[in-house]
Length: 200
Image: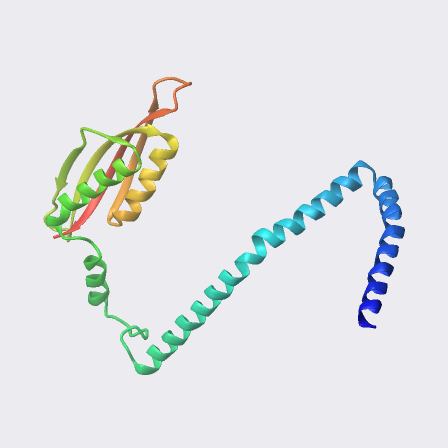
């Protein structure tokens, strides 16, 4: 009995579809060019929603959960009276924390090797660099001036600068000079002037 009812339902659905298909074809033909383009855009939007937007909902939920956890930890730290609970520092303490951020003066060879490593990683030619140590008597920081001539494509040079500033946070770029041999060449010759600030 149930199988007969199921077969009857399926046959009724097929009859309705057979009736509707000619009407749908006729309505689709009446849409015109702009209507068909609009229908195509709606279909593309639905496909994009299913393939690109909905999968990221789980990532968003994870980030929200992580934010809730961090807020809970912050609240518990404040209740416990830990140092992170917003205890005010004196001016001297804040200044010391600021200076402690900068690497020690004897670490300059490490940072230069790091720049060389990043240049190789980004396929950049780094040659004949110039270095000069500026040590002012009344200053707490020493400035290590560097002139870095680099050669490569625009994307490579840009990636090198971004990676260098991220890897060496105590470095600041003070000047950039860009030269290209001719209009058709995609290789740039760039002269970077940078300062690495070191703690005495």
